[in-house]
Length: 162
View (cartoon, rainbow, N blue to C red):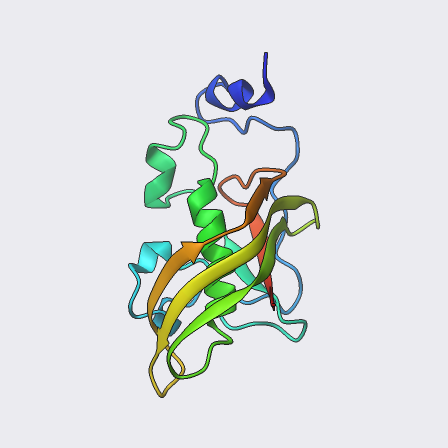
């Protein structure tokens, strides 16, 4: 049976893996919806970067996406993971309208890889206060899913401009 079937068949309310949720690293930044007033607050996965340029959060068990992906054994949707990387890149965009292009990754707090993205291109609009008022994913050359994020897991997003 392929590994992805194990997620859908996990006992109701239990994690389909054996790892406990990772704790957030020291100095870790929490998602900051106020930095992204152009996005639905439930779709904001990043905050201000830490000293190493990383940002992220903890995927909450009561997140609205958990209800349908997958019922009884939720995981963070791949689109949400991709969006977290784009949000990280958008934080470094200049004020006004611009495009970002680069590579990024999302890892769990324990450092295990979740997704790697190359050639991410997004349109970004920022106000003079540095808030992202619009973010639109335009293209990606490659997305490689390597692991999963479960409710309660801390994740870290990084982005390197091309």
